[in-house]
Length: 308
Image (tube, rainbow, N blue to C red; front, side, top):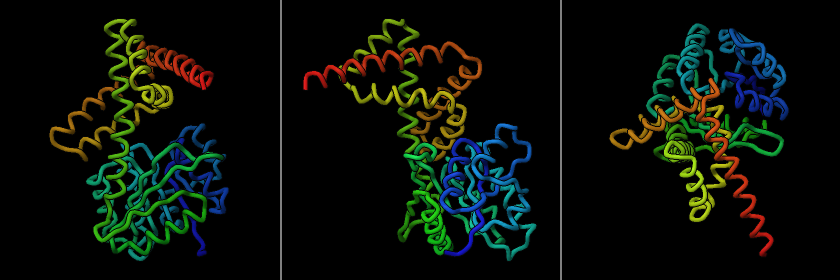
């Protein structure tokens, strides 16, 4: 296998875990940019086996750069790296993989930043939670035909270093396909979470008894939804601020009248994010509903097991 120098921007909750997986599976020290980052982020990067490097150093040393940042930061990261690559000279080749939750139009604008360089651009989408000892998320990737060789090399390298990568291929495949998959998946999964939140808060605003009745009705008619609420809402609350921009990207993906659904969900996640920052009452309402749902779920499943 050829020698690779990997960079990953940036060492957040997902990025640091992916870097740790790469490093522990033979990928070596992973470069990242820590300028202006908090002490906690610097420590997280160190624990993940990451090393600080400027954008200029990354452009000069890396053979592959992955971008794993909140959607609102994705374009700025691509722009900074593109500038560094242009400064490094037109012959400096590397592969850039944008793994962020943006729509096809957004990722194509990022790809355009690298025109006039030798950079191979790959569109990526991470589906699932951060890697752990027992779990590995899926990373879906696509590229334009001119970068098909770089796509194959990235898939081989990433799999060799412990990542779970799935290339999207076909006569019509290209940049935008992986992002479209991410938008569709997020629209379903995070959209469902936003719908749960909307109806729980609306029911509670009528009365706590209405919310209790809603839980009873869901357990009676759609018990699978109760399980989803238990698992998805607690995970969503600290990440709601990230979902705001993601919903905006989905609006651009869906377009027309259908996009208004996700404009509403953008406001829902904004409301949750604001409440989370200030420990607002919405958080208590949601977590109380989750706790009651867990008790209901446990009682129901225990009864079923006992009967069997």
